[in-house]
Image 1: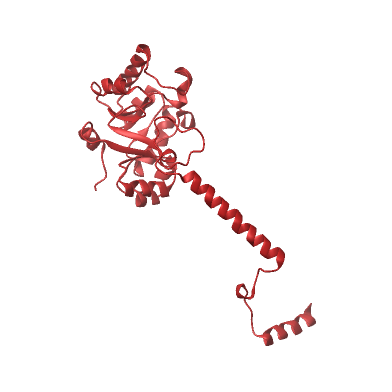
Image 2: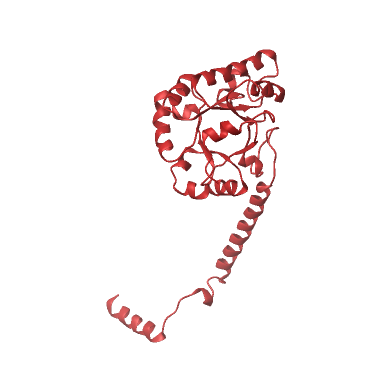
Length: 265
């Protein structure tokens, strides 16, 4: 399959529901690609690793980090250009509208963020849905319109009531990436940690768990402890190393070496 482009996403919005995952390791990226996940959110460093495109050659990759980790507009541009050169397909940006506009002016495909924006949650009351009241629904719409006008091509819409998302999707030109915001989003987005059951704390309501890696990690840790404990016991009891673990040499060589040591040591 040829790698998706921004035009492909825009042409297929509303026609094909895309799957998107946040992956943190090359193993997760490869698994997602082999499973058919089309869109990947990745740590920026992953884009700079040549092994990433070996693992996920066809995925549309969004490197992203919180705005406070990157900085202001000039910082975002300096951050984005090397990533674009190395094969980033789009950029998650929770920075200012001026930053979105500057990136778009340089033809960098920008994805903004509306609704619950974790890095800016203090303005909407913490980790909770945004858009359940008329005023907050209007806020989400104004965020979408502002991103359109700034030149973004996409927006992550997070924890917004599904009916509000649907009304917005009918009126926006943006490619909407839904994280807990309903099926009207053009892509559905989850974190691999949640999908794989790796999270140990509270799992968000919108997340769906498909495996129990946490239990598997616990099982493996128990195996590690048991194996290491047996090693300790073998050492203490003199059972390791046994003859089969040792290298030896001809007794004549040992004798000659000992005679030589007596002369020089």
